[in-house]
Length: 206
Image 1 (cartoon, rainbow, N blue to C red):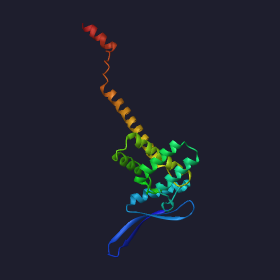
Image 2 (image 1 turned 90 degrees about the horizontal axis):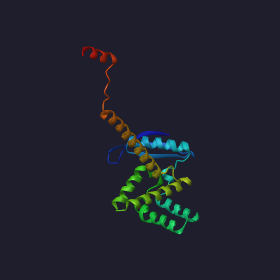
Image 3 (image 1 turned 180 degrees about the vertical axis):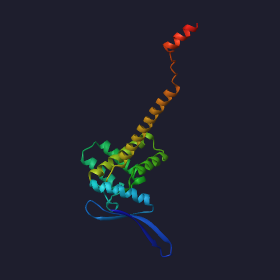
Image 4 (image 1 turned 45 degrees about the vertical axis):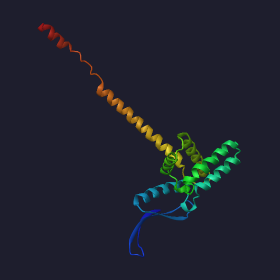
């Protein structure tokens, strides 16, 4: 498993370069992914290394699309005997909201950033806040189902929610620390009482 630079010259004589992530998955099959920037290749290398070690990596060449995962999720919901109204809502979320935006995207390409952009797109298309929450919830369930089948390494919806919780906790701690400092700054100073020696000296002068 490695990251290396590749250089070549096009037919028109233009020099090009890219960064290659070369690795073997948990089945021992070799895969190569190409990136324009080294930082992106390094990030992908670190991610793949963790997933392969955990035995959950799915190579892009083997990954299915969100559309295909959605169809599998609906079928699983029907097989589980969920209420018709529930299955109908799931199908509407997939067909009317999820597929039109990210249906062609492979599961291996879905990240927390992808989910965030999807949220923004839904809002721009005037979906209500409540509807956006329901659609993202359905996407999270879709990805969870794909994980159970070994079709996805991670659930990007859960990753995004986890990141947001960490952000809220960090801001809350910062506010608490700021409040404590403010209390120290604006707390009225305590009036010091004169010592007994000072009181005796004052009494003698008077």
